[in-house]
Length: 106
Image 1 (spheres, helix red, strand yellow):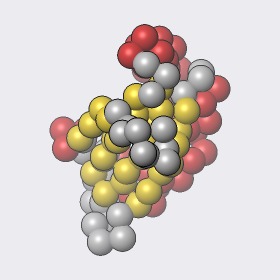
Image 2: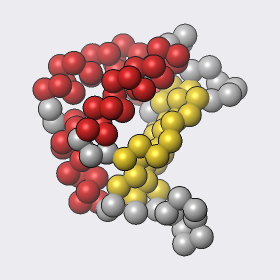
Image 3: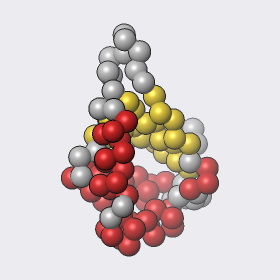
Image 4: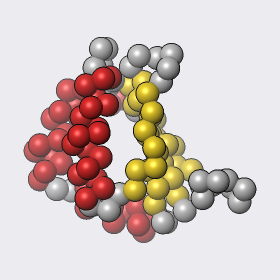
């Protein structure tokens, strides 16, 4: 298994709007393409911080799913403009993680 821990910082005051957009649009779209979203979080202390985790079988699965999601007209034309409006994309941190043998999430 391969996981992505994705940390985003929303533009000031936009986190609730971003979380709703994720729940209502982005995640359903990605899941419809085969993505597995493990969890989503808002930061209790930072009002602009949003975190989510995705799971992939392996690197080939990740590459296939990235292409299925991000190389589409729906993503480029419909979703990306809204993403850019709500997120400070330059602050995003994406960590690729491999669970240890005792991890309950593996």
